[in-house]
Length: 206
Length: 259
Image 1: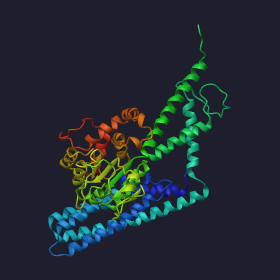
Image 2 (image 1 turned 180 degrees about the horizontal axis):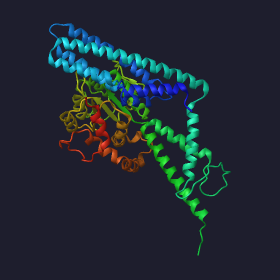
Image 3 (image 1 turned 45 degrees about the horizontal axis):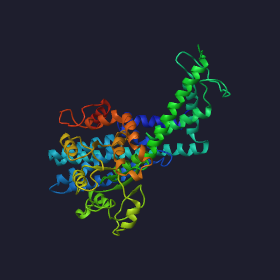
Image 4 (image 1 turned 90 degrees about the vertical axis):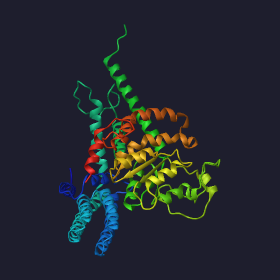
């Protein structure tokens, strides 16, 4: 039932995870995209790239000084670590840590190499996520024209719910739309949909 | 001898099941309603973390106010310049008025205590980052605990897992210590702390008379998560003075975060 675009997005997300560009926290962020703010992840990631670009520029400036103020650099990189972990930017965060470690060695040349690598990781991630969010945006506009996907999802869950509520330990049940006059375990589709909607709402909220 | 038909028995079972479902739904609804009255003050110097916290808290149905520093937090609470309301009879601090409940607070110099009293500024929970320029989260914690806001639970957050730091905060009166990045599951564990704070604002509660009952039943549901939250953040060197129950999941997640 998934569209090709949906498959593309899932595949890209999986590869971002597999290659360590993003980690589980990125996935957590996407769970927060909701009706009120479907672009939350995109927004917070954009905020990250803007903020971290400044931090990287600040580090570059400090490293160009002689002598280098390592305390200041460490502070900047601490901030960098925090924000990259908050958006799940895994490889970027790890490279930032490497850079922080090489500050302790005091070897300016390896420091500059490390910084260069950080900038590369940063740029690579930005490129990949720009592409990813473009696809997501496309999917969102597709969904708007076709119809709210959640409706289909809720219908499917409702069917499952009917089955769940009808089945007792020892019986198999054919899910049949009843008239409401049958005794015992018949649940109206309305009731089932309501239970499912409530559950979905809770899941979303959770 | 009364014969009860199988059909009748099954009908009763079905009805009982529906009743329990209804009761559960009612409890959930009550909890959600109470949560909508919770106001969290979030303190973090990182704009990204503020945005994240705001989202996490809003999704969890709390009202949020985000500030960027300990000083701003104190200003919001009316504790700047060592001003404290312990000695006054009114519980609402005289401080700049704030209108929206989900917002970033930017200080205004006009004090409007009448509006303040009408609004009845309340904060059910303070969440603060540990490492901040200027006033640290720990400093903020101590200031709050030494003020009229001392009964408000304070939770400290940090991206670094330093047991001595965690202990220091807990000893300093922090309700809990969260490792960043904060996730939804962390907020769920904070629920019991927030429910405790309901007793501070009896007139604000929807069903103040039944608060205790709700607390008990809700606390029972949350007991496992409550008792596991604090100790799981502390390393296994046994320095922890809180409850000893440990749940495996948070620990696993924590160790994955370490570089």
